[in-house]
Length: 173
Image 1 (tube, one colour):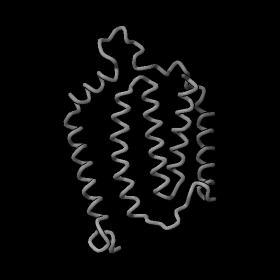
Image 2 (cartoon, one colour; image 1 turned 60 degrees about the horizontal axis):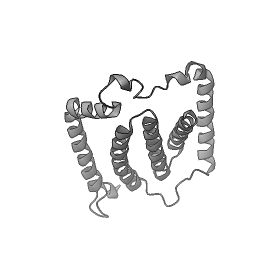
Image 3 (cartoon, one colour; image 1 turned 120 degrees about the horizontal axis):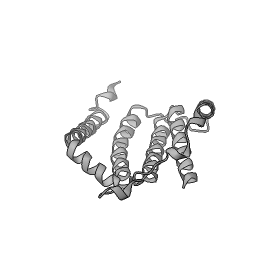
Image 4 (cartoon, helix red, strand yellow; image 1 turned 135 degrees about the horizontal axis):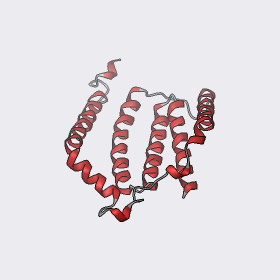
């Protein structure tokens, strides 16, 4: 299980490097989807499968809006891919930074800090993720409603900006 978590965390960092080093929004959006998937994999590994599913669905819905907006703004006929020279240089520099950070801070992070959410399950009536979801809907219900309205407003703004050849606000630029 520890090897799988290391693999998921490595793919998470690799996705972050892909997002940070790529100038093209198409490939950066793909890197963000990978990062979202690996982050949800970390949550599943620590015992929160329902919360990770909700996070993945909400995050991917938001990513579709961001991808539509960035694809409308940067419509390049030949975007730079991961194999082009400047992108490879950026990826190598970021990976060297990640390795150096691991060498410097690797001694203070032990495997014993990987505690699952159900570690103390015998003292609880509910699972940890179910209790967290109940708390999210009870205490943070208004924030969920506001976030839903903001996502809906963002969708309408993106649709208005990319509406058509002559009617969209950014097509005149």
